[in-house]
Image (cartoon, rainbow, N blue to C red; front, side, top):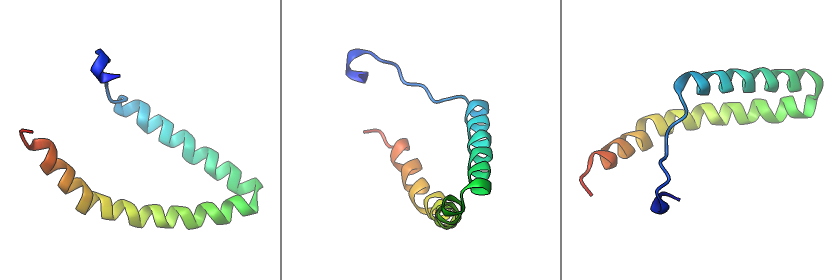
Length: 71
């Protein structure tokens, strides 16, 4: 796509924040009506929290470094 001239843009921060808020509301609603969903999501959310810390300190630092390189 990019090779054919497509320009890529990030979603605006306010749009991402609203999408995240809506997703969290949906997950909460599902957890209130589906015990299996609630259990799986709680386990996943714990993993996601730990993984986020890893990516924030390790992967993000490497990505920042590589993006600053003149390749």
